[in-house]
Image (cartoon, rainbow, N blue to C red; front, side, top):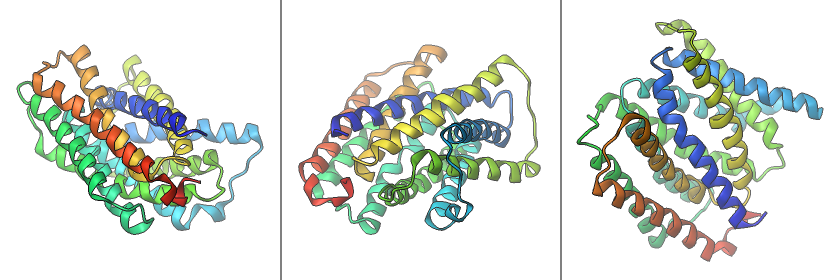
Length: 296
């Protein structure tokens, strides 16, 4: 696979994930966070298990522990925090907080898988985050910051940052991505089912609620995860994670169209900086690509 194709796959993943934030926000009007989480990942798990069954692949329970199990638990907790956090904040706020993950990925990748964090790369990541900050501050005129929800989503971003690094380590194995993702989705569904009794459950059987569950399960879970994990064979953990910052632009764009979010010059400048920062981060890793045998 060429690096350009891997980039395109990551960008498409980021776009699809970016649409999930406003859809989740709307879905939470009709169901409680953990109910939404459980339904989304139960459906996503069912889809992947069906594909595995058609392909004649059987999961080996012995492979569900260790590093794979740890990554699955981290992913599950991060998703639970996102859904809970989004109940108390807006989609664009959540997208920004969660997509602080690249800084945690860059730091953890530096120590865990030797993706060297150079001054150039730090600078490119900093540009991306300054742009992200400008996008959210530029929307302050119309979006009241919800501190509790933002902090919960920030914690989710930190967990996901480390999760991406662990996923990169697993990506270097010969593990089939469909089998691996099925295991990770199963972890999220099981965690959601286990904590359901702890939540005040509510669910409204409506077309909007059903759309939110089905859309996020298929278009924001199964498809983007497959694209992202395939691309992770080529791209570095830090680079792939930094592309996720594009989710903020997508989330803001959806809110502009459907909620009437006011567009300011600061938001436009911030969006441009995000794109520049993502490009520079990828460029600096690609320039020294031969140094990282992790690409193979």
